[in-house]
Image (cartoon, rainbow, N blue to C red; front, side):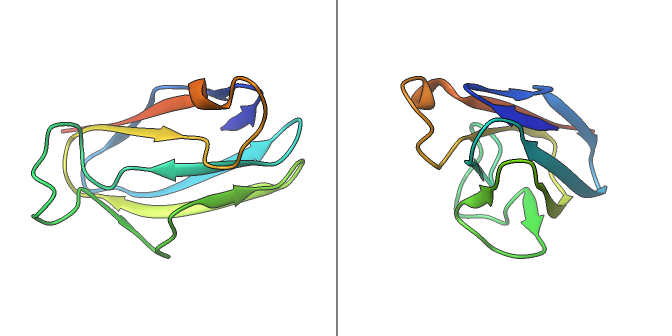
Length: 103
C-alpha cells in the first residue's frame, strides 16, 4: 500500500475475517500517518473491537520512502475507515481510505 498527497492506494483494501494481516505502507512524497478505526462502521463501540492490533497506537507515523508494517487480526466483518493523522498539506482532511473485512 502507498500513501501520498492526498490519497492511500489501493482503497478499499479487502481482507478475510479471521486473518492475521500485515499491512505494509510506504509514504512516497513526505511523512504521513495512519489512524484506523478498531470498530466497523455502525458497530457498538462498547464490545470487543473488530480489529486487534499487535501494538496499540493511535497514529502510525509513515516516514517518506520507508515501509511501515502494521499487524492486526481482523475478527469482525465490516467496513473500517482510516485516515491520515499527520498533517500533510491543504488536502490533508480528505486523505482517507477504507479497510473491508469480508466474511
